[in-house]
Length: 230
Picture 1: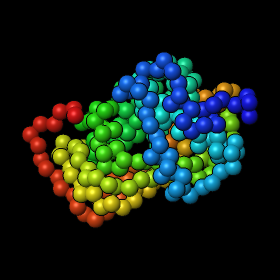
Picture 2: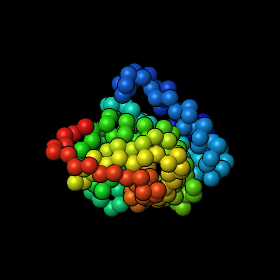
Picture 3: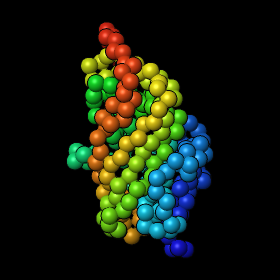
């Protein structure tokens, strides 16, 4: 394991990087999220097994995409070749994700939320306020490097009310129900000889989260005269 990069061996590896331009001025603290992951995950992978390595790689990638403000500081990706796409959509660059944010890069406009009405910071505040921890795990891996195909799970608890703007420019509010938000999907990633991501494709139904949020029907929609980027 000595020749493996730290970002596939430690799910918090990149939070220890120094000289980084961190969003909010410091490395993020994932203590609560890791605790929820450990207590409620479905899969248990042997240390340094392929599923374990993939899980840690993706977790470190998510940290970098969410909190490292300069693409040159992302160690989990081959920055010269890296692209990201959702459900067969057009490839997005790392610079694009840095501009719009991870939530906005993944979610398409819908009746509950529209990425065009929410900035990077606003989108993170919206979802992290509603669901303080959003744990992630690999359920199983179907193929190994260089093309890694895997099934994943993302879950949390809706602890606070949701407020956002939808594709019609309406203000949408959903009362917190205190229940689970649990979504699954598939990922296909191509990695280089350093196990850096060069191409990531994600497939899932993004409406699953919103349907679970609105499961009890506590939804209100309010017309507003003008919606500006939040």
